[in-house]
Length: 382
Image 1 (cartoon, rainbow, N blue to C red):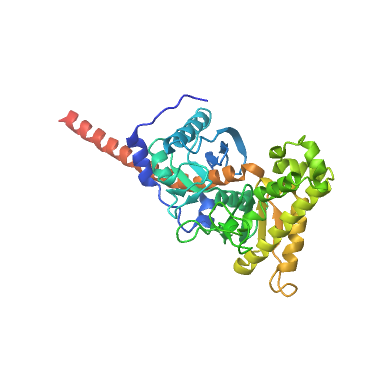
Image 2: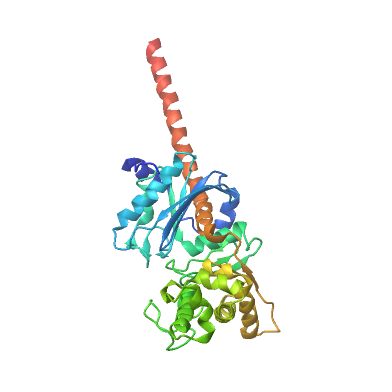
């Protein structure tokens, strides 16, 4: 990775003034956005992944590093982002940077209001990075960027009303209508994981009880498996033997792997998670009535072991079942790179604005040079 370099503030400041929120015309804008390479960055609890993405959603190069510890200052995370962008800029002509952050981003897509895995609290991330990098910056929630990528290049292509659900440690989500990300008045729409589905149920880290993600997420899957193993349940002997009695070593990917190999308990646990997923999707269908649900995140790797039971539960709990069209439920196609690809593609919208402003500055400079040259020529003839 290249050595950290700090660009002078005036360059970033001038360019930051060009950047404004993309607003409400994303669908039309993406069709006319410049077909230039941009950098997408996905910031999660354990990794920061950055990649150069072309206008067709192809990843030209990808780099990654560990996420700085939560206790470290926001500037440490900004340094990490800047290093990754500058490293990629050494080999690619980058025109804009898009960041998908695992946290709440305000409606102006400037401040990260809260990030559970980082030290960002009301952090003006866009403005800070715009002042350090030589290209404009766009910031959004990582579920929004993943949903945009799936709508543009993946499982949601051709859909006008799409809801994405990301199943990982918890549950995130995003809403797209008519090719526009619905962020809500304050920018924090799509936090589906904290809908209450079981009053008085499991305590959630958010402080409430009975949140949806306590019953259908990676954490829920691992919790149930470890509880059965700790109770020395006969149905858990397979996984206990697999981890050699070290119950703390049980992970979500391990449960999925054993389920594929036919372990009855692991299959049943994924079915339980899938059924809760279907219940939540039915609730969202009642509220939002989309044409398609796209299921992404690490847990979705279980594929039909999870999504099959989800479809069954969805049909059983759908309001007006039998008398209304049913939304399609599809697994996301872009995998863990979706957030990065979507962030890069959204950044292409602000790249266009930047290029227009830059062109106007160049034109003004050229007019001035012509005027100055004319004055010099006039003075020489006198």
